[in-house]
Amino acid sequence: MFWQTTRFRIDLCQPQVMGIVNVTPDSFSDGGQHANTRAALAHCEQLLENGANILDIGGESTRPGAPAVSLDDELARVLPVVREAVRLNVPISVDTYKAEVMQAVLDTGVDIINDVWALRQPDAQRVVAAHVQCGVCLMHMHGEPQTMQTLPMPGRSVSPVAAFLKSHAQALQALGVAHERIALDPGVGFGKTVAQNFELLAYQDQLLALGYPLLVGWSRKSSIGAVTGCEVGERMVPSVAAALLAVERGARIVRVHDVAQTVQALKVWQAAQV
Image: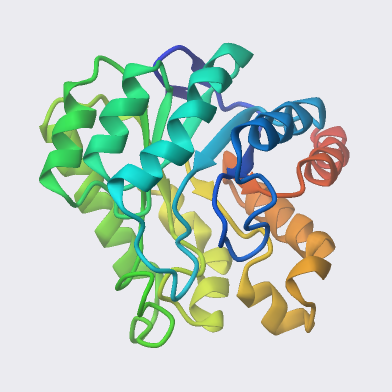
């Protein structure tokens, strides 16, 4: 299986580690730590040294309750970092739902658009569909960041999440986007209860049955805190465990903060694949 992106055809025979680069003052785990261009680029280089395969750069926090960020502010945060990051010779992803940001970063040579809104906005669909071959990740989110955890989705999670992702992937393909450009993310923590999040992990095979690569982000999420009692800064070990379980159950890309530790764990897992 491959993931076709702007500059890279990513081989997913081996799991890929996507390192998180938050260029924000208010992300739930590392807000403010890499909020200027120099610090963000230094973090990019450190993540690559630690073994990251892909870098995911974001200029707007989507933590529960996070306020929306203006287009101008997001562009001012992201573009200076992206212009330099594309020179690092690795796949660069940008985490955004704004069509204008998508177009601006794709114009710099970015490889992947990672949209928590799954390209629900027609302008965003058009930007991605018009590009010759950028990769795209469609994520499921119930509600919106301001309200998603106060009004989580009802009932069980797997079937509605699978139906949503299938529908949006097919809609994108109908616009001419090739199947191999699309990855899916079930959206752990985005409008779901703790039980619903772990149901997505327990029945991850039903999401894999859709036939697209699965990108999963458990890193430092509140559900991990709920079952372990760990505060955000103490969630490295259980986050690595969740990433490893996701890979064991078929995820091809894991989006993480703790790249070095995740890479080490995956090396142990890979050594046991005979």
